[in-house]
Length: 347
Ligand SMILES: *Cc1c(COP(=O)(O)O)cnc(C)c1O
Image (tube, rainbow, N blue to C red):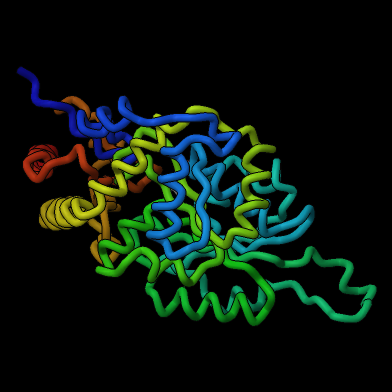
């Protein structure tokens, strides 16, 4: 019998387990547009509590959660500061501009996944309390968007605190794209609220390492979440008996957090195993959660991907860079199989 496929392309590929499917099958539901889905209400309460925020909103995707957040903080023509390689800027089809009428101001991430705060301060457009005709040139800066984890890297808590003070001092809100916030919390050994407290609004994905088939949450103050709720409706994200999906989210938050440490251990073992092979250069300092980035020093990464695919191992190649992601459908034995196949490739 062929061994099962090992899919390292992303943690989005996880499939609901039998237990999660049972939770889905048994979910109590109602019309969530009327606020009557008890399972959605439970998921929103649970998420808000875990992040230490007043309210939470269930959305179909992280992309929509981020767009709703940008629309909540920025009015038409307002500017937001964001990483050039951030999901919000690079991977969301320009939605903040296309649909949110907000103007992005991208800055390069430092290698540790932070935005340099001097650069952020310099990027904030000048404003004035009194009328100054020359200042009408500028799009008012309203929002700083950060990401944690950023390409698998954990953004330090003291950095988040400093970024928040700068933003507050300059009248900006902070939105944290915490698609993998729980990975960051697990790596730091802190409660997710310890990270979330440094942002006004925080989004996170249920559909990645937490193992749910779909769904993301946006958490923040009730007043802003009321506005966000309206934007979700504008974007077509008002769903009906969606407790069937929320049940998977509740299950994920109640059962799949402790095991994230296994993914991190597997990623570390994978990184060390590959880095020890001649011809592989792993970004070791970047291996902090469930992602491994590497390059091949001699061979073509496309040839490597093909070789691995023939052995039932799927990997993601982006130009010269290979990304491997561990998740709940990748076991410690799978990691050994991947390392053995990589060794076979270079030998
Ligand atoms: C996956 C991801 C999102 C949201 O993606 P969806 O596929 O729309 O759920 C947002 N930000 C980051 C950093 C992500 O990795």
